[in-house]
Image (tube, rainbow, N blue to C red; front, side, top):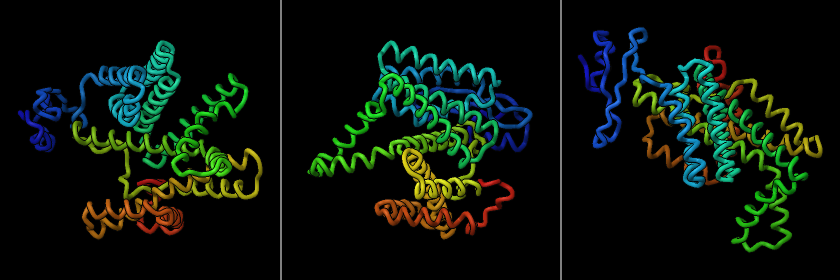
Length: 349
């Protein structure tokens, strides 16, 4: 009978052991022994009492955000990913119950501690956990997961801001905290009041796209955490695919950028601002695709990882480097330079 983690693979190959396997949570000095079981049907390691762990982790995440608003923000970068891995095999009714329980707890603690920001972050963690869980069940690839989270969570933020508008009557009052933050950041540059006002008015138009990019970063961070936990502790293949170097957006997504670009050029008023923000987010996603292409060819040439990191840091330091990645990503829509079998992955890999 295999009891050590390093012997688990041999047990899987022979199929002689369907009993519990002891896996030790790092670091060993903690002496925490969690028993993972081998599913006799799939011959894979699974976590017993996943419902208990999912509910416990979900409620702890909301509690940390409410009690420790500052440090608790880091929970959003890891919590939803872990919750999605633990809850994706639960019944649908239990997933929905967990989602609404997290929202109810966030609302209650936000009322008790008078923290609107912490309640909003708690809602975001609950919503992102639910979306990632559904994405695993539907076997969505990473590009589609990112698009889904950006759209749904951004709509949630717009709904929340819309509720604020109804309470304060004007958008100007809603945007005051953003304006104050931008003006404070420009103070060290010793600009005139007119210059500060012009820059602030320009940047304030892109607040929605900044929110969308923050959602993108948080979502991708949770995808990395989910894949790491699945591979490290459950000894399974990653729940989210493809890897970064094979990242490829669906072909239809380019039309979103084309229509947004046309709206930004020819339309006026609020629709023009909306199209500019959509175009900015689309180009950002294609910049990620271009970066994946660069990593693909660097790995094909067996370039050392440290050198790869240095190349990406150098590219990100210059705006024309990011522009080059964006152009490369858009070009890949028609050329498919990496020869990814699109017919098999429908836009991912």
